[in-house]
Picture 1 (cartoon, one colour):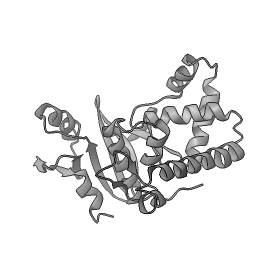
Picture 2 (tube, rainbow, N blue to C red):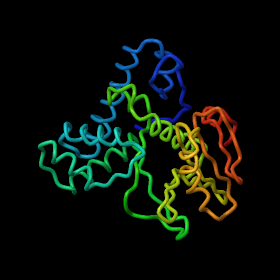
Picture 3 (cartoon, rainbow, N blue to C red):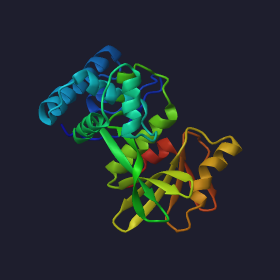
Length: 249
């Protein structure tokens, strides 16, 4: 079930961020119906796409792994880390099984795996990738938490929007620093850092530092929920909602 991506909408009176068109356009004011719809979509993906098509037999384990990945979007994840989490909960499972289930979730477009890219070495790294949810409203529904990490949620939204704009997206690594996204399209490249707020000078410098280490002349952006914009030696700070509503393709 390849779910079409769409622009994420922010509701001023609702802490959830919703993305599926039906939820936004028809069910947004009825939270009970919205939850019911999201639960139906999730179960359809799990039962029909993952279980039926991928040969997955343990639905409870599959949902536990999916919930763990949804709860850790934007964090570095390994199969070993997921396996430890499951085993610590009382189950005994192998890394081979976990790897199979994670790949099944990714193949069903419920989660997107993102590889790390060495900016200096210009090569993909095989360790500590990240996962992003196909839909932030679905993620919030499954986690049953309206106050989960806003920083990682907006990071997820930026990732989906970059995909919509046709970019190939990786996580950037330069020295010991990390850049949230390296977005590549044909012969162009853009770098993105995403943060909820950088009004504090120390936080702003921490977010700018990885971008400042990149020596090429491709565009570099710092996206935040702050309504303050700026230009820091060529690094453009932009309000994330303005960026989402821009006409960039």
